[in-house]
Image (cartoon, rainbow, N blue to C red; front, side):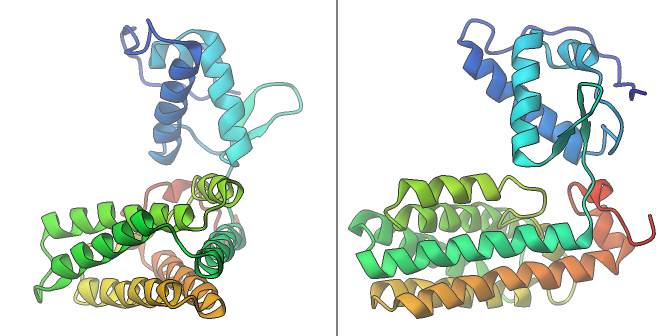
Length: 261
């Protein structure tokens, strides 16, 4: 059984003249958008030929993109061949968040133990200062919220780099591609509401705390702060599952398998 994709005229891929690797990355990004946007239903075999037409690339990069997304955990290989979109229980999502917190805690500990590179530490301070400026007004504007998302993502990328370990950095890059495990995975849920700014202020206080711990070479404290920081996402997940409006604003919400389903 396969799901129909919306008809679209074939388009010339922007990377048609580049290497196959570039086309694979483009196909991977577009396919992830389709999945998180709910255009491909969980448990249904993905029609490869329809994807070739939809994405405007050949079968080779489409197949490579499918394999990569299966490695990320978004897809599962079917016994009869091909792939289907996975769905995720609340436990699955909690585990992914916990894994990110553990790896980011390790990155923070290594940064404190080994000493973060001066340029990376300066960039982390800059990111924290920019977030402070965004959160200074009593009410968070839409523009400030968008800028917060950008700086929050930047902070977490720099933290991974601060560890001074290519291995740890790569593993963090892998885990944040898991559904709902990104540092910004549940931030969109805080875009509105009376406590929108307050929740981000709490997260920012933890950004400052881990940066201080790294600068003071307090490895255990740095590790603990980042693991506690990830637990904010657990609270946001619980809030989303209890709110229909929250689920509507959560990318990939259709992938969540509810109890009893």
